[in-house]
Amino acid sequence: MASSSASKISIPTNSIKLTLGMMDLDYSLRHEAPATITSSSTTKQKLEYDKWERPNRMSLIIIKNSILVAIRRAIPIFDNAKTYLDSVEEQFKGSSSACKHTNSQDAYKEIRWIK
Image (tube, rainbow, N blue to C red; front, side, top):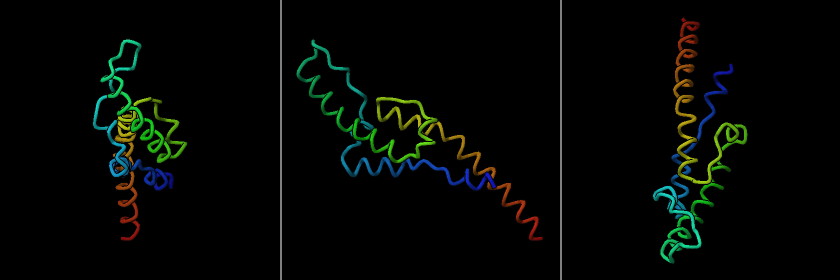
C-alpha cells in the first residue's frame, strides 16, 4: 500500500501561483530578478529591485509554507521565488508520472481480483 500514500503527494503549484496572483505577489514570478543593488546602482535600478524584492520574499514564504517539510527538504534552496517554484515543479514532474503508473497497476490488480 505504499503506492496509495505516494499518490497523495502533490505539490499544488497552480494553486500557489493563483494565490500569489490574487495577493498581487506574483511580480517576482513574472519578471526576472533585477541586478543586485551596489553602491553604483542608479535610483531607477534601486526602485526596480525594491519593486521585485518584497513580492519575491513574500512568495518564497508562501511557497515554502505550502509544501510539507519532508518534501521541502528534497528541494534545493533558492533566494529567487521563480527559480524555487520551477525547482519544485521539476523535482516532482517525474514522481507524478510514477504515481499514475503505480495507480494503474493497482487498479489492474484489483480488477483481476473482482473477476
